[in-house]
Image (cartoon, rainbow, N blue to C red; front, side, top):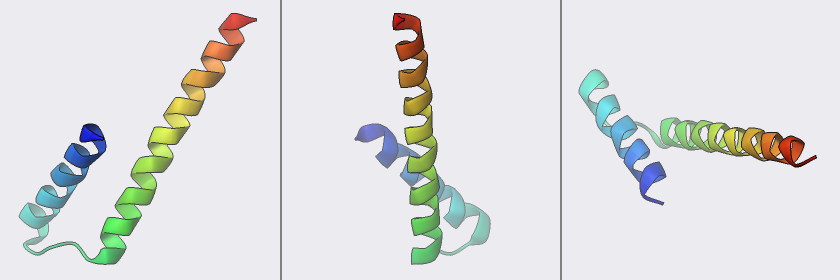
Length: 55
C-alpha cells in the first residue's frame, strides 16, 4: 500500500508545483485509473511469464 500512496503523493505535489493549484477530481481519477492499469498489466505480464516458464 505504501508504493501506490507514495506515487500518488509524488504526482499530487508535482502537479501543484508545475500548475500552481491542486488537481481536480477528474485529474486525480484519471491518474488513479492509469496507475492501476499499468500496475495490473505489469503483474499480468509477470504471471504470464512465470506460467510459461513452469511448462
